[in-house]
Image (cartoon, rainbow, N blue to C red; front, side, top):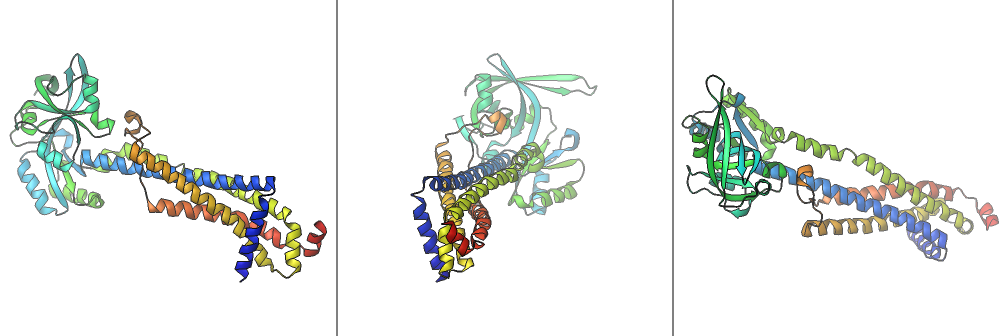
Length: 407
């Protein structure tokens, strides 16, 4: 009953404010401060979560969970038996694919670019890490063909399309340490896109056996393995077990090691969040506080009447707490709604595009999370409640006699 009385008085106060322009304006400012703060939090959290998810997913798709290489780029012999040993001894491994990698140069239409040449089994690669095919197909006619696949951005730099001839150069050192350039022509059979500039700019794929012959690797030797796990949660423990199982000269790199700079960039973007939350809190608290203090002054005579007819101090406090929380709740609902509306538009229509060379992705990523909504709603309501305590306490200290004289 007492709560219903406080709620009734709070509603009547709210209705009376509409006839008072200044008080109505302060309520509007308080509402807007909470609304804009809630919207900003939803947008920032959704974008940061989207960046983290997109970058991790793309990094895993391209680099695998674990990359196994030879110490100081030593060639690794008997790759079939090594793959069989890995999959048999470590059940967490979903699959392992051999690779041969070297640096090189690619030339087409007078343009030259430095690239990372990677020999792969195309069928295994596309099944493990699907890529968006822009032109041609992600496949080779046979395991010894002189064919290559390149990224969209690299194709744009080289002004080439599928069917064009690319000249690829790599340099090996002979027994005396002298450079030995190797040059070969390849046909471009496919152009792919990962959405991450650092990969689309650099990697050139060619058949595994072709790369072995071109790079003069011994029979049945490779430079490394791409390993996919059943769950990325086990990546560190599996990496340690692989090191113990194979030993020297095998060197294990996890997806976190391979993309450490990118993940560090994500963590850096998260650091200002407490500062942003603090600033939003200060603005919202001050506006709600100001609104309620003005309300207390405006309603001093009314408070005196309510106290004179027997209304308890705690009920007076409830009246102003309900007013402040009501404004905060309304601002939170509208702010979250607008925030998710903007996020939805970006998610479905890809309105905002980014420089892939700077931000790693071409489109501003968005991720939706229930925890974001819970965090923002809880945070906004708590700061609204805290902002009401001082004005509500002041209202309870008002003497009925002095309040009636004030009127």
